[in-house]
Length: 127
Image 1 (cartoon, rainbow, N blue to C red):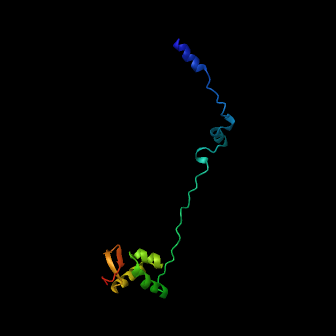
Image 2 (tube, rainbow, N blue to C red):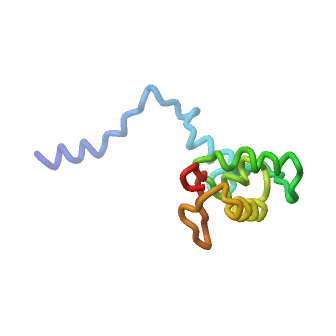
């Protein structure tokens, strides 16, 4: 009895899905075109985000120098990056400016190391 059930199950063909139309099957269509595998359209890599070039000054101008003496001593945190960013000068000029402002007593050091120097405004009691 068991064998008869098994043999009849094997003899029955698979059910045809009414929803799927074999003519519109995407897998078969790809094989017919011959563009499967390595022949398919290759992925284009994006160029990535391109940063805007900074055009920072490389020499001190009168306006930049005036801004340095007027505004920088009022900043709470003063670093090379802050001066470079706000005054649009390059890093070596910003380091030079920190040195000059420190010598003149307009700013006071918080933490000075070879890699990063952090200064703050010189208040009335420290100046």
